[in-house]
Length: 436
Image (cartoon, rainbow, N blue to C red; front, side, top):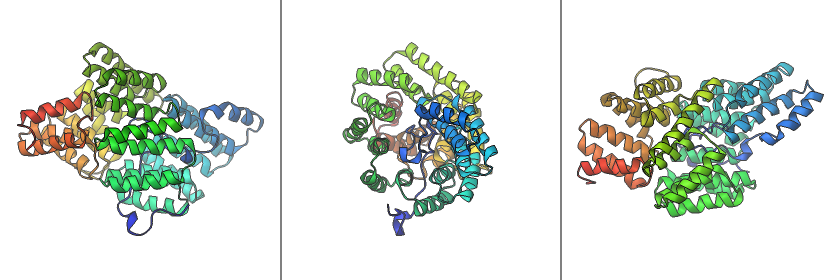
């Protein structure tokens, strides 16, 4: 497969979410199957364990088992797999110090736990041991993106593409184009990825990403076709089920959307899915049932934290909308400080900036919130919810013209971005006299 990053087409690209970090960092779609090590799915754990009982000095086997535990956590949403992964990956390093498989696995584990500084350190060590390691290269790009180091991420993506081009690089490049507002190029890159993909998992992942691009543009018909395609090649694919539930809600099929959301949280009870189900229930007037979903999301965050996961971003977003504003602000500040070291408004990923802006807003600190909300929307990323947050903050500050512009833009991009928050965005816009 020829390298994708050639000439001017490389400009401005950064990378996507880390494989294994399915916990609501933007879209919980996981990573394409080609980015995962062979034998990693949870169904192979028993076989790996049996082999290691017979060959306990097999460093590569211990590394594969660690990767399998990280993958099981991604597939099942079970964070108790992470301590097991940590233990066996370190056993691999004891058997063969410095082996790149274990170091890449520890990088993926750190990323799954949202320790992106740790992920970067392990990825760098793994790539020093094996410059062609695809898993380590993917983790490195993802960590740089989540830390807001977009220029460095671009350089890392170029190196990864030159060393070993393929689906994992293509999908990351597409997400970066989306982050920078270049949706046309994102679609083109995903088209290249689709043309070269053969694995069902890859094809489903790519279809979901194309569906997300359409959803973010408010194109429900196109989004639905892509989610349906993902389910055709991979029945039961949870991110595709999530997309179809959103489309149904957007089309007014609340009953169908609720049925879909109930199935999603049965399969994979991650905080984002639980919260989306709760918000749909709340928008339908079923507040008591919504509170039960929110309670499960809160419990998940506690379990995740007990197993080494930094859940501050999830906590900040959830508490801002459905819980304790002060807890939201503590979590959002902690997340921003961890990801974005320095002083004042600094280089940082858009999700951390948006979470801090919204947490400040719900605590009545809109003057401080405004700069972070502007940071979150500065890259051109087409996220209607980010623009809604910015517009709400501007409205609270009396910046009526700016608020009207940004609230109208959030609804223009996707008038159905949330069954709970899109109507509130419209109400806020109407209060300002509607779109100009």
